Image 1 (cartoon, rainbow, N blue to C red):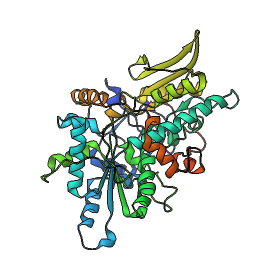
Image 2: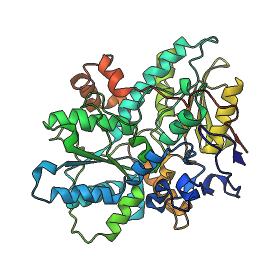
Image 3: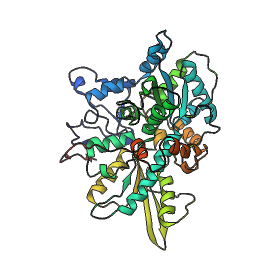
Image 4: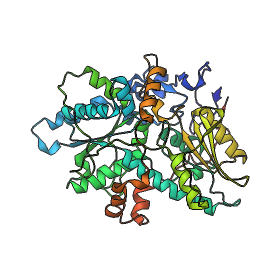
Length: 456
């Protein structure tokens, strides 16, 4: 199997193994070709995987590689150490936001309940000098709600001359980067314009929270704890439109595995602490998640919303049907023998390629696809639950799935905090500020290459 051409140069050939999704790829950078180790490949000595987007030199520029390599524990501790020095002009307010798919990893790894793991993680970060620790679930609420509205609008506007469907999710940075840097048109017009939870969390912290605390955005150092390395790449493209010009929403992304390593090597005395919220004086009483087996559950939430909004049908439990494999599943809404909605979940690179090929051939029957680069979803991100040789720790992952499934599900519509933020932060649910803060546009690679598909 080989990737024939990407945006700027020919990709290296990948060696086929029995475990295609977990096959590691040695991708030479220009520096490596000169006998040096490329900066991007120094990152946490991480291997690149076929299920992690293409993540090769055709998708990552040399400048981006250097910037990504700087997002590590050393960068994080440098800020912590500056805060301990007398020159207060260089002090930063440290805020850490934790993805909900990271918490089951800490719970499984340290044999704790997810609530205790959350409190242990929060206490550890604050013992280091972090000021605030947030949960990114509220950002995912916004992303899902905006995606729901966009799907309904696309469904109503769809026609053969200007197809608005299928809508493809935009929350996975590995998938979005591949779509932008390699595929381009005709795929990018189908990407949902709603920003990812990480991008929205950056705006919440650097704009809303900063103003609430009377802080300049550049006085906040915002760290995301995430399951995968692709989030580091995503952080390079984030900006905060309503904050100061050029302000990046996320300054540093650390994977769950990097944080766990810090915890294991630390001898700091830790006192458990509850997560903070963006509202300052309020503490979240209970952890919650969205209705996805290993993800933020875009498919389930959008499916229910669309069924009600478009066809006045109330859907209770969403029934998934596995097709090609367990990572390609279908959900349909049928009435009187007619299929009204046909949704799919496509996880892992092989399934993504199948979606793209059928979409280009005009033989794609789905209205919506939840796309994730990692087989098994975000819980199986390459920044956590890995063995020493870079493969998935299946026993640990199984524990994580059980822990995640036990976290209570809450509909995004049910969050009073989100509704308050729409009014207080964004001037309503349909204001120009919503478009500015919660939506984005996509850049393609220019004129599409003649041959840019993976040939399996």
